[in-house]
Length: 175
Ligand code: ZN
Image 1 (cartoon, rainbow, N blue to C red):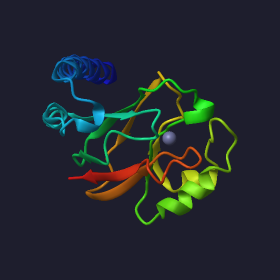
Image 2 (image 1 turned 60 degrees about the horizontal axis):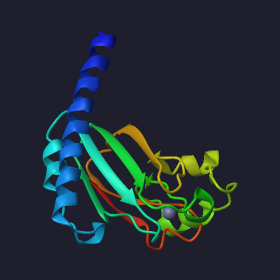
Image 3 (image 1 turned 90 degrees about the horizontal axis):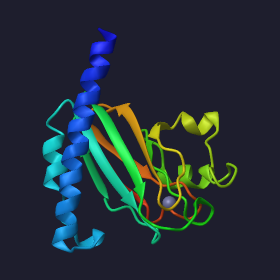
Image 4 (image 1 turned 90 degrees about the vertical axis):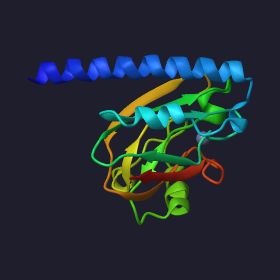
């Protein structure tokens, strides 16, 4: 049974990979830059399936391409963080960190830089404030994590590389 579920998940994943492949092709043809792109309907419709698929981009300008992420309650979130820039992790590292409700984003951001460069891994204490997070990545890299969507509500996400959370933050909405 376990194997069967795994295979099913694999098939679903492949399906979404195929979908996101076609949507990025469309984006290229539209000629819009990341900041001009409208909200991607393809991603929202993909979220009607068994898992929430989120593709979050980050760049050399210290930006996420989304300030708001919407997912559905009770489903796995499969989130890919992509660094579309060229700068190394030591200079322009990015991660995705989803905070528990009630955690003050600026407090967490200030505490998180005490980790060791360039990965800035979190202490046990900081991990208590986190629902999910990716590792730190540099230009040209991407990382995918899966986690259970938290209960309905609004949560905050950020990048904890030193000095980034002022620009690199947003709202994560579970519907
Ligand atoms: Zn960053």
